[in-house]
Length: 423
Ligand code: AOF
Ligand code: ZN
Image 1: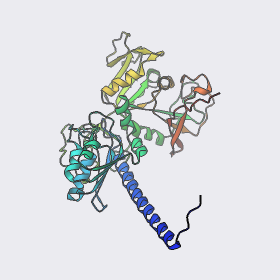
Image 2 (image 1 turned 90 degrees about the vertical axis):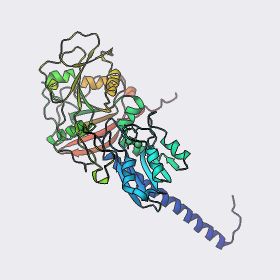
Image 3 (image 1 turned 180 degrees about the vertical axis):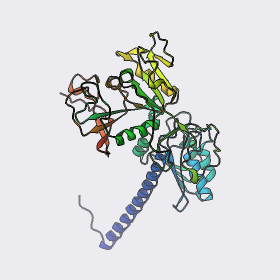
């Protein structure tokens, strides 16, 4: 279609104006993205430490768009991210904007509603990455809107989901987030033909595993692994808790001494009151765990999951579960763990158990440590995962590939099965 003839001066002006407009909108969006990205970064500072609460980050700008406060949620029972950031901002928050990675809460739990804290501080605009899925705390966005605050939702939603993947799974599905970890040679074997399996991967990789264990609410192993290797299943991070480490080496529990929630400011943004040790869980249908197994020592609490029809005198904290698919009902196990406020589990040890978790569709993330070594024979890292034909392959997408010492750490997540082609 032809454009009507125009005075060249007019069209030049129109072009300039259009450009200025796009520029303004663009600058605005870029600024928003940068502040939300910072909020996501802040949220990550709480990783492994906030269980059973989410990780949340918040950035508060003053009315002119300058950063006035920052905060993150550091431990369950501690002040919410919004409150920490608002405290730092003080009066400068009036007329300003708050970027929050999770919708502000609207309930009084261990602390007061953040919706009211934001209203009280005079915040004019709130930008949210992910809505709060819990009936208990949701409603902050609606309340803020009802009081005339501009609320925008969904900015960097993917990043907000990712940083909080464990808690969002727990909140939405009522079960912990499951990470399956294995170590193998380049040809995917976890032991030699005679069963020896120690030190396939390097000390650096093993230290990395301890860090990840420490971030989990529970460490799970199958009875096969307990009988073969007598693992301890404890987390022994090589470094003490370091508040500045964004990956957070230790999991913490509510402070027994009830830290003063009204006090923390940006100086103690990363304060962590106490180290929480991950629960150890043995999946053991027939109750074959030897009484002297290291996993039953006093180093950390241990649960042994057995079949509900098995008779045993095993002196351990037992969970009785229905049998399922030749083993135990793992979904029921995860429900029991969620009831104990376990938000994330680290599944280790046992190609059989890993196969069962996969068959029951219960693996959210896979972390493989691959050593530059070849065995050519010996058990595979994964047992029967219910795949009889190539179309049933469990498809994953790589998230991250990192060298760890001489080894590689590969992180992958399941992808939904592609739609079947119409024939
Ligand atoms: C947090 N930190 O920064 C935000 C949360 O037990 P409470 O009272 O601390 O409330 C926890 C709930 O509050 C949590 O499950 C989530 O739904 C909401 N928001 N929680 O721990 C925060 N903003
Ligand atoms: Zn809150």
